[in-house]
Each structure stands twice: as C-alpha cells, then as structure tokens.
Image 1: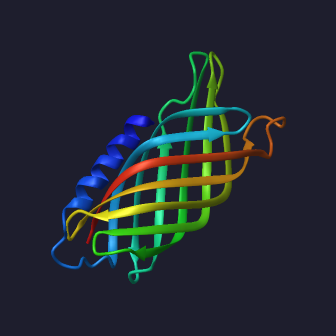
Image 2: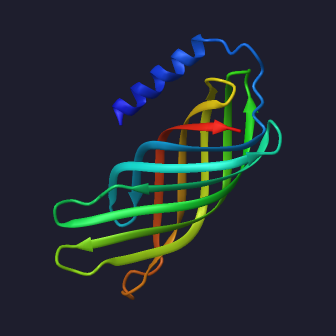
Image 3: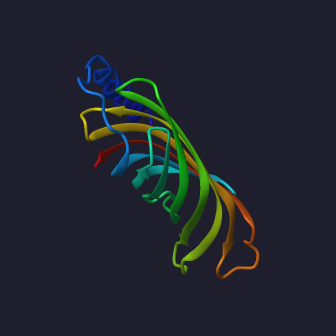
Length: 184
C-alpha cells in the first residue's frame, strides 16, 4: 500500500511540474485500467491486489457516466481462497482545477460477488447489489492520455447461493487504485 502511494505521489508531482500547452478536451469516450489495493469487509477483513477496468462518456467538462469493474486476486490465507469483484454504473461529477488537474466524485448502483472456497470444499458464492461511490484526482498527461488516483467503495448485502445461514451479510468492498485511461 505504501509503495503504491509513493508511486502515485511521484507520478502526480512529475505531471504537475510539466505544463500542458493546449487546453485538453475532456469530453467524449474514455477507456482505461487500474491497479491498486482491494479490501473486503464482511464478517472479517481481507486485503489484496485489485485490478480494474473502467470506461465512460463525458457529456461536458463536469458531467459524465462511468462503468467500473474491479476484481481481486486471492484474498484468502492458506486455509481458504477468497475472490471478490464488483461492477458499478455511476454518474460522475468533475471539477476542472486547471488544464492538467481535475477532481471527481461519483455515486451509483453496483453488483458485487464474493467467492469463498475452504480447503476440500465446494465454492461458496455470495452475490448482491448495493451502492457505489468514489472520489479521485485526474491528471492530463497529454491531450489524450490521463492518469488518476481514485478510491471506490461498493457497499451492500450479500446472500449465499447454498447456505441459509449466510444471508444478508453486510459487505463493503473498497479499491484504492492508480489508473490510466485514453480519452478519445
């Protein structure tokens, strides 16, 4: 986590010191990916690597719609494999600070899934719907290339497909990530 924060701060500092000559057009379609730290809180707390893909459409400089998918690596220990993933669709509100930097916030709906596999057992699937929200900073590197540092959270209740004892489990899945996207 500390390494990711140091890398993100270094990249933002480098891009802040360079000046983008022309005003960038941040409207239209964009698509990108991210790498970060994913954390799931349910009956316990597990942390691991999170991978994401996102894309959307900015209707103007301050409003857009974004789809965001992020999944985890193995979050379990030696006795259990745990994987998590979410898909969110959110309106995104952006405040353009200058030609290079912008801050954004978003809130919307999401689906989430967690798969748990204890040793020598079948998979236990948990699925549900919830709310998604996120904040972040976006930096324009070139006219079309952007980096961003964001924090996304999906919160809701998960239900087990097989077990009646694991119903309505309150769950938070968060992802702190460094992303890069191409603005068309």
